[in-house]
Length: 92
Image (cartoon, rainbow, N blue to C red; front, side, top):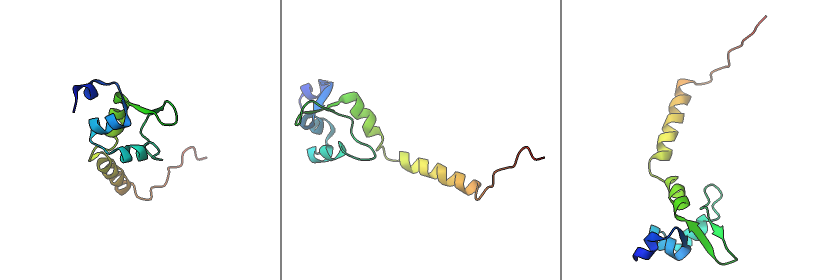
């Protein structure tokens, strides 16, 4: 991989694929992902660029263990407070 690719602030999709190790087809698909779309700029109908910093932020969503840890916390809360009814206040 060339030093030129690593020094860029903005990547076109082929350079981003080279930088990230992800396939161009995958990158095109995640541009339109309904839950976590890859942030990008569309310069015209064919030219798409992605900011290095925004790519780094976006890829962190997929860090292994993050979602598992969050689900464990929610599961634990639900176990501790099953079918809890809200307290009544201000009776009288």
